[in-house]
Image 1 (cartoon, rainbow, N blue to C red):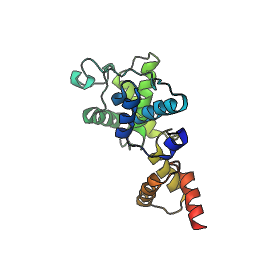
Image 2: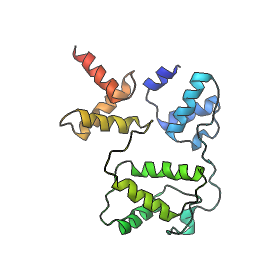
Image 3: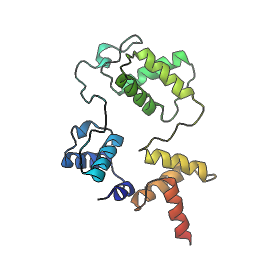
Image 4: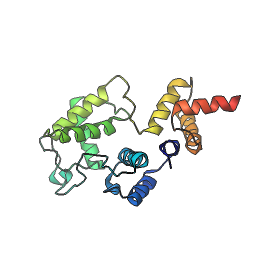
Length: 197
């Protein structure tokens, strides 16, 4: 398989994990989808196995949620579970009453948290809540995430297709997944244009 063929396919996380395990990528089950895609692309380009992440993949120790979430608690073993999400929402409302969750803010909070920890910054849950509020109050659209094909496609589709609904975008995404083209709005639009000719 070439990188272009890989990019033109649509791969579920389970498929990526299985492929990554077969080619020998360590800790494949603990990697996110974007990390799996990066590692597989490096392998397809070079034939070499390279770790796609610098973050620790070991979550040993007592989880923070088991220690009792509170604002002054240091972030040590973070879990992205319902209790933690509910804590973030509850504390955010105290800082910014009426705050509405912006799509993509949790994803970006997790990437920010990982980045801070990699830099050696000691975080507390107060820091997480503050960043979460900041992310949700941002008025500009978030930059595209590099592997978020579905999210990026839907956003681009709705921006470009006047009067389109989310349901239409999702329907077109399902069709795009079956095509042998890159999974982005531009490729979908080119395909639609060629089909009409």
